[in-house]
Amino acid sequence: MTTESNQDYYRYMCMICGFIYDEAEGWPQDGIPAGTRWEDVPMNWTCPECGARKEDFEMVKM
Amino acid sequence: MSQLPVVVIGSGLAGYTVVRELRRLDSAVPITLLSADHGGFYSKPMLSNALATGKTPDSILSTSSEQMSGQLGITVQPYTRVDTLDVAANNVYFENGTQLTYSRLVLALGADPIRLPIPGNGADDILSINDLDDYRRFRESLENKRHVAILGAGLIGCEFANDLVAKGYQVSIFDLSPQPLGRLLPSEAGHFFREKLSAAGVKFLLGTTVEKISKENGYYHLYYKGGGVVQADMVLSAIGLKPRTDLAVAAGIQINRGIVVDRYLQSSIQNIYALGDCAEVAGRVLPFILPISHAGRALAATIAGNPTLLRYPAMPVMVKTPACPAVISPPDPGAEGEWKIKTVENGMKALYQDEAGNLHGFALLGTATNERNALVALLPPVLA
Image (cartoon, rainbow over all chains, first blue to last red; front, top):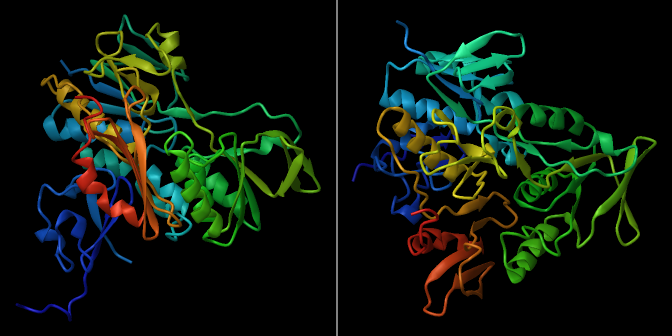
């Protein structure tokens, strides 16, 4: 199991409603464990708050 | 022969959802988006928790109109107000007298905040927030203020109340209903929600109404039914939205509460469509993100030549109040059944079930919001 602890986790914001997906926390309610990279989040996953698609998300720089 | 554009009036979420989806389905059709304001894209839900999330009006405007037109290959005309429609000639007339001919027209006009006629010389200063420009005025006038009075303890009023108290402002919030989120929650849940927000500092004045607002030495005195008075240095109104239908009425397009459209989002005029806060589909006006996303995608497919019936699955509403997060799917007014309430550790689960135990709606508060996905799957579609 490759540990990537030295590499930071990133956060992605839904541009429709502002929901934040944090790689460090994942989204367990949808079966996405903590530490799941954004590119590993299933393509058909949608924003829990507004149903937006992955393409509606953008990486948050702060 | 240059093809006539699809013209969309309104650059809110509804307008931009149709335009983005249509461009995805048809890379060639000319599209013109008309906006009465800056025409940029931003998320309106972000406004009611922008203080806590450290956002400013500028940082909320994520994409300018120039960027949107570049990214999507469309024409965006900001600060362009439509004067009238000529539905026979398929023309839009602008206030400066020029006109634009469309192949199809989409009305994504949005809604106006409802303003109650309240007597008193302070009533003219009441602010309401339904777009980014309103929000900019709100943030500017919030400088050096301490106590905000909010009229209306519905979804928007409560979200702003929580956002303000989280930043140390004093908040007094009025509503005629005996509980906050009156239309969305059963009374026990309304009580639970109220307690949590009160604990966070929100002062509720419920079952009453503001009868007069007078401005004295820079403060607003809100006289409310029952003889009390609250002194605040700003008044915010959040008592609901009224669909913008004037343009449609003047053009002879059928309206009721909103612009009446069928399941293809088509109005009473064949090549004119409507969606979002200004539209009424199957007798409902649903000014929320999820219905607008579904309507925008269905309408884009229809305009792209693949007629698509609008369907709404169950669409719970997220209430972004950190003091008591809530996920609510109100039962259909006609649904038979009753509320069953269960208190959990730091939360409450209210289920609306019929005799056979079928679920028709729910309200999840606090920790119970994590049951959302499981319960949504059990709900009937809003529009099958």
